[in-house]
Image 1 (tube, rainbow, N blue to C red):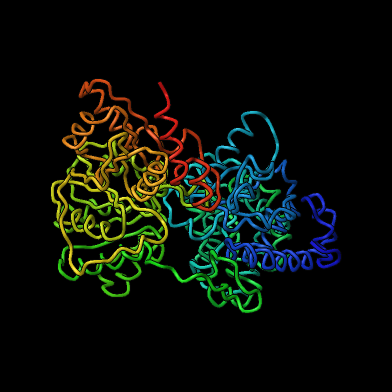
Image 2: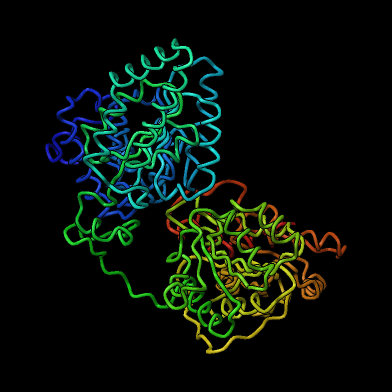
Length: 632
């Protein structure tokens, strides 16, 4: 960061430096933070719009509260880039989401100021309630403030946390960063006046005095209290959405202008002196201060490097093939046109899952349930009970949040629900909160679940058709992020035989049994092994459950060394299933190597970097196999 380019931010390395500024300097600091954020993210890529909307909130919170003694609990991490800039990480922001660089989300091991790790939505309030309970149990005195983006308010966990907080009546603050939901009309003049009125110490002293006085009036006291309460509640109903939050036990302040730093500081200074659960509703603009982001918040939510002046992404190499996501989305529309019982739903990700095509083409067959994966799965179960064929398209990592619903509401009732898990395996820059590293493991344990994973985009289409036409229970279809292999796509669909794999390359020395996108890597690894004089057979297993036991029996009879390959945790995944079958089959003299993701969380980086790190690229697989063959 060049000297004097950012006159206020140059003076700030920690929140203590923020608190050392005069309040009149805070607006200048906000401008510097916003400009610095645009400058860096335009070069590195990352999540831009939400952070631009949270600049004043971040500055005001660190100015008013004594962080890190006081705890800020951010929901997700998209809105927390300004928080990172203010907490000693501005000089490393250019490494964000890059291999060995800063995380794009909150990470406790990265900073004392990141009090709770968060990559999935709707967790902050529950975590904050836990911190508050620990604080009071240990007789400590810090404040706890949860900052929740409006999108997270579609998740039921938010209301579970708020309900618990309201019942406990412990001191905590929730800041609702509202940049899209339109919870209430923005009646700025009236609502701002009312908010400042009810936050004012004199008003609150007057209110307490009224209640103390009416308590001494026999007969009339209770009536006067009830009348006063009705007047205050009536005003709130007219000009604020506060009754929803107050019904959950929170005292509500807002909506306030989330970009007025002076007003934010004043409100936070007032409410931090109050007891009990408090909710401050701040209305912000996603992309605030950067015109391209203000005009197109969706496009500039998460970005690749872009031109700072225009906001247009730098030209990338034209993809050689459509993405798995796009192929899936188009196939859903094709199948929906021929089957009027087929519907599809997602959890706030129509674009990311490819279902935006269905949303546009056949909107009556598309549902977006918001960030509510548990509800989405049970909603699909309800659809299935009435003869519909629901496709639940949710990223692998997010479907983890609905394991109980998959088991209890779908599988236990043998309902025909199709689960389409995008982003299976290592996904790249979003890191461990978003890697689809566990789906084969958590799905494989469920009785009656069919699990398949395509080697390419053409097989993806056939697997989707197979899943839709299979009527005996739930089916999961797992595929990776990114471009396909560029294979030709048929105009029609073919049903696959459930539980049947295929041999793609013959060999005599070792069998490579792969699943999903690892099939391509296994074929490339076999070519490398051939250069070393090792003839590897390559099998596309297709199905994780049920396994093709006939094919496995043949392999166990022909090879002394077998290697399973998967972009999933080794524990409990595809290879574990093969190992379990090998133990049951009592095949003699067969040694099995399960090759997949190691038993640790994998950090962020590009997919290529991460595959190399865990030896799941072609060269890594070849070296692992060669080492295995050299063992006694």
